[in-house]
Image 1: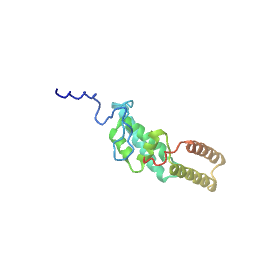
Image 2: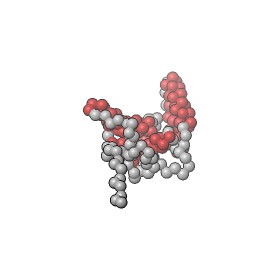
Image 3: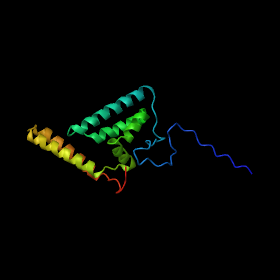
Length: 166
């Protein structure tokens, strides 16, 4: 009896994995694609691409400027890139600095302890700088209140499981 032919696989866009494929845990594998994320076309795609690049630029600036958040802008850039540029999304997902942050967030909203510490120290330095520079009281109070809220929210975020190599 001849062997039966393999069952046909459903057609899907190149690089799109079946839904039961787990997300990549290493930077060398491609970024997982989500079938629920719609690739936009035309003007919407262009606007999302501009948002992705502007957010990435702000995130890079945030690495060097105290008080400007890097993580939030990188998350926005990845969200917009997933809808407008698979190539940019893949680059972000496999990037040495941004990739682990994105994979941790995607895996369950995880924020690593070193990232929490860096954010807390940066916010503390910004608050101290505002006090030393004698910024008007209401601006200092507003900024410190916002940073306190962000700090509390950030420290309440779960951390990646121990030994997780994201």
